[in-house]
Image 1: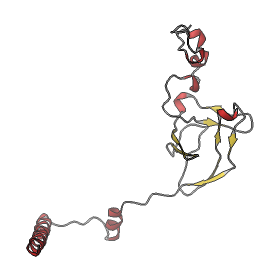
Image 2 (image 1 turned 120 degrees about the horizontal axis):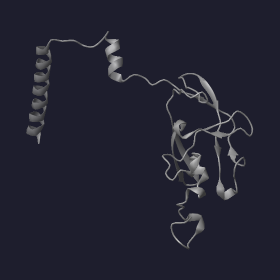
Image 3 (image 1 turned 90 degrees about the horizontal axis):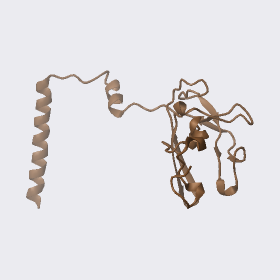
Image 4 (image 1 turned 180 degrees about the vertical axis):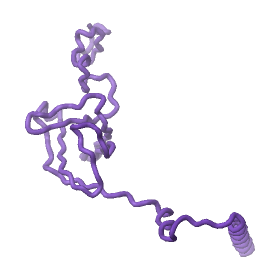
Length: 170
C-alpha cells in the first residue's frame, strides 16, 4: 500500500484507498491539505464534541508560539446560516470557551486543556472620519466645479510660495 519501500511507515504515503477510510468519509484530519490549522467543532454537552463537515468549516486561524506563549487569531463571518453555529451581533454578550490538545502532554480525544467560560462582546466599527465630517456638515459638500479649481489653484500658489520662501532662507 506504500509508494516507497522501507523508511518510516508512519510517514509513508498510501496509494491504496482501502487504507484510507478516514479520507473516504471526509474526516477533516485525514485531508492531505489543510486550509487552516483550526477546526470548527460543535458541542452540546460532555462527550458530544463533533466536527463540522468540510463544507461548514467556515473558520480560519493562525497561531504562533513565541517566548513560551501561544498567540492565536480566529476569523469567521459574523453571520452564519448553519443551524449549529451562532450568528454574532455587535453589543451582545456571548459565552465562549476554548480547548487545545497538546500531544506532548499525551492529550488525546477528550483529554485536553480547556478554558473557563469567557465573555465575548463585539463592538461596532466607527464610520470613517470623512463620513463623520460629512454627517456633521449635513451631507456631502457640493460646490460648483469652478470653486474646486479655484481652491486647487490657491493651494498650488500657497505651496509654491512656501517652497520659494524656504529656498531663499538656505
